[in-house]
Length: 208
Image 1 (tube, rainbow, N blue to C red):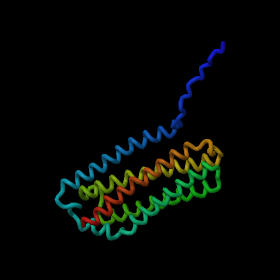
Image 2 (tube, rainbow, N blue to C red; image 1 turned 30 degrees about the vertical axis):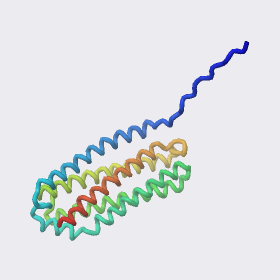
Image 3 (cartoon, helix red, strand yellow; image 1 turned 45 degrees about the vertical axis):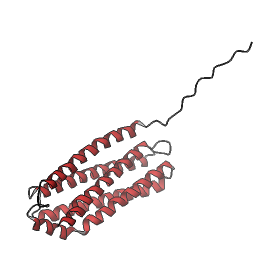
Image 4 (cartoon, one colour; image 1 turned 90 degrees about the horizontal axis):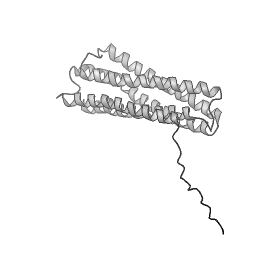
């Protein structure tokens, strides 16, 4: 008598999220809450003032007139760095190391350009008497852009670390979680800046 053999039931295999990527997702979730609280603060201040930005508006107007091209250039520079960072990650995933190094270095240079642009803005503001204690708008402006600039600086450190590790052959098409995680963080920094630019520059320009 033939004995029927039971085949083990095949369980579907789902791609597991790498621990490094999971850690980055959790970290970015906390960052979303952090920047969300800053945006909530800004909109609370906006809603609690009849005139926005509050006096002295002449100082703020002088500041925006003096630096108006810089925020636009900074936005283009930072978003361009997001493009080069994305394709750098694609390059290492395809074991195209030469292309990766070129794009990663371009990303770092663009990120530094953004930081220098923001530094110029801050120096220009201070020279016109616009600082953290000038009024509530100035406090919100420097807090939000300052924290974002600090996150960009942190991203530049991570990008440089990834570049150094790649030069030692520690990344390949089979092992590039570190590159993917840092790329995801850099895209997050880009998205946050889009909201900051829309609120602090475009929005204020429409209100003035």
